[in-house]
Image (cartoon, rainbow, N blue to C red; front, side, top):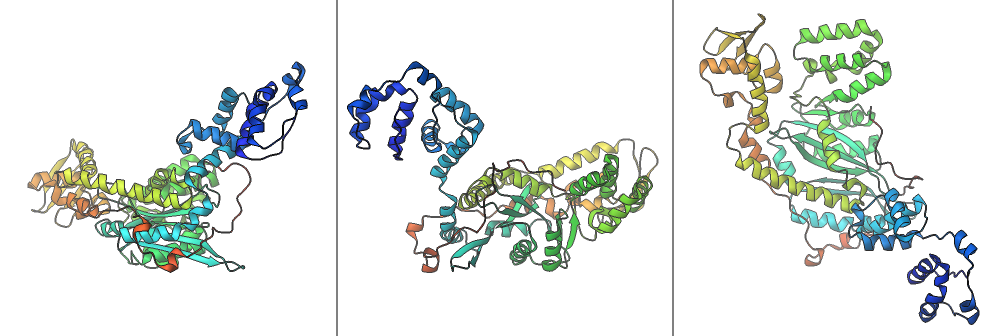
Length: 517
């Protein structure tokens, strides 16, 4: 058996096809000699392999050869089989044994051939952001760089917020949800997101940021950019998990805003710290309570069950997680689920190079705005469909209740078990506090409106009406144009941007993260 050291792709192909069956040397010898890579002698042609040699001969395939076969068989290697499945396909189709990591590197090589390498993605980033701002005037696309010890300019942070998102957010409730999720490419990093909720209870992305990690500097930089498009105000509420860097950044950039903790993360903390799921349920009941009386009763039950848990919740700050004590308006946003949903939609793009990730975000935003614009314009009701469903569910709870009229705008609702609630239609208030907290009429307000002949749509806040829903998606998000058709400034076209100085961890990147607390 003869082994050749040439490393060209065509030579590797010959080595692969021939070593699959050692006796193919005679068939392929003429082809190998015609390539000019190796001089075949008569001694080579007279060589033959015995059956024992053929049985024990274990052929291998390199990652580059498997990558070529992989790309030829699957048109889109990005959505092709995983490394484990590719390992089985190589064994079945090519009769070649190969390791898992070889197949993993083969798929990565094929994907890089389609998408481009991560290093090239950073070099094209300045030009892409410039073209994106040309296509979407008034959008914010800021690139933060740093200079290393050798004088090279390297990527540090990037911030992106489309003008359509900024314009539409003015018609939403002034409440934003913050979160960060990890990227899985070569240079890692974290994707920071800020989003709200539209009138139809759908996720509304406002801003995106790509940073090195979730630290104080990164979050302060991100919120500083966000503050330029969404000013600090006492009418603003911010919801997030209790990450220390988020708490520090909010206090530094948004001192007047009201910061609330995500209830789901708080319940996970209670479960992991005190090993008691019943405590977690009680914490959720206390957090969602509408009246102070009910909150105190549930919190007393938590204290009697586990005094350490009650002290832990008190030290966190009851105003940050309890609805009844929150100083701002949380409406129905008691968790950071809006950002969690957005991160799920971005799952495919998070495994892409940074340029393709931004293109994925732009494409997703364009589709969302177009689809929701059409949906909102087709809707004929005064209030949005999801709010209408909430009010329909509230009406089903009105069975067995009685109404006593106090005045033309004030009524008393007596429940089936004798519980009384007073409704002030003019002030949009009810003693159950649900109407006042959510800005959506409760069952008592709906019954009072029926009694006086008032339409339901007049009881709902303006932020939940179809008019606000249509205005939210009035603007459009356009894709970037062709750089060849535009005179790009020299400071953009000649900027040599290198990737950040990070080392890729060993092993396979994790696809499923640990449950956050």
